[in-house]
Image (tube, rainbow, N blue to C red):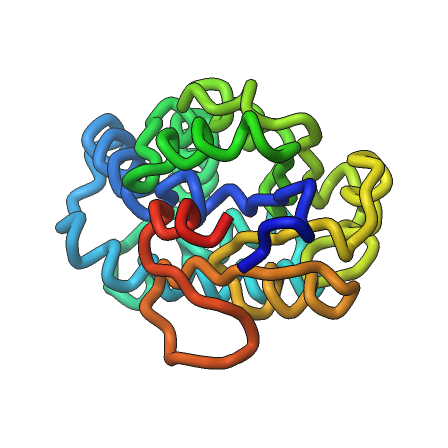
Length: 229
């Protein structure tokens, strides 16, 4: 489908290659045990996962700061669950979460296999809205850092996907035009529509089982990339 047109492939990281939900759950399990937070992990995650997506959307739209994101997502969940978490506890958990998150290394199934397949044929890059100090650790600790030539994050760009600024920075650093570039990501708004507006080819990794659409081709397993490239 994309063969002959694409020379460079840009991946999102969280929810696309790096299994954020799985690694996040393992992190909360660890820090709740250490800090003796007495909540049922499954119940907590049921509330936290959609809350985290909501606060990330606000952060992406520049409606809250990084520190507000990290505090409010926990505060809102504990409030919803009726758990009496003090501000001190929330700040401590927020810090411990960031400290430990990148030490868990679960990738989506077939991620390494697909990167091995693509690496000899294409230049591979990362465009992420995640924070610089955490994202590099994730890439290194999960063993995929060396597959990528350019890693562009929102702090470096001063803008978050779907803002064209971050995509243009990635194109400039990679030295490639959008018509020769493919963006692969899980967020229809941030990754797919953001990249498509600049003329990228796009491929939606539908990790959240969202509704079908015709904005971009959809895959549900990273292995499907091999049949398209």
